[in-house]
Image (cartoon, rainbow, N blue to C red; front, side, top):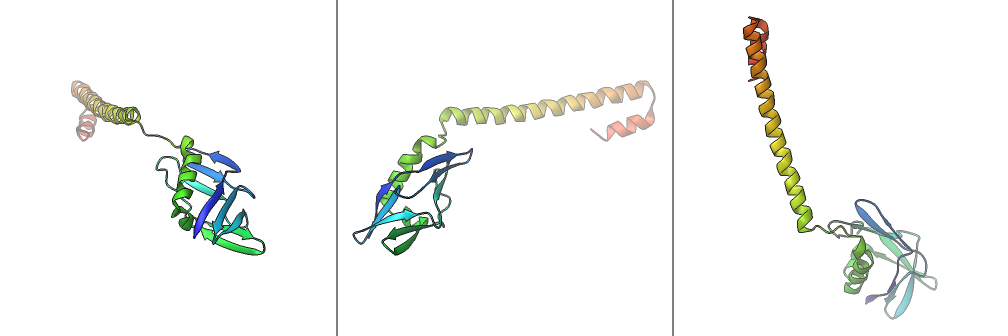
Length: 153
């Protein structure tokens, strides 16, 4: 039986996509078969969580824990199966998540609609411009320019 005894970040690093919870000695410990194991940073030393989806990304990372001379390795996939671990992890990273609000979604939808409308307007203006150039070519009796412009309609 594995349980999380303590989980505190050494520091938290964020970028536009991820929250990285970096660990160090004495900040992370687990209990395995009634023995306390302290985290040692000889393999992985961070949890990487997607800020939008709130999913842990580096689940294949191996974390080392030591009790005396005995070292035990646990993958993040194994740690995620522990309910108290996920609760603590999300409590630590929760304030760094990017929350999608109804307002944000409406703004993005509005931007999409505006860009579609803009594309339609630009296309109509280009056609009108070609028609004006065709009229000018007809007025100037320039058959070569006329034939070239008709291709754009």
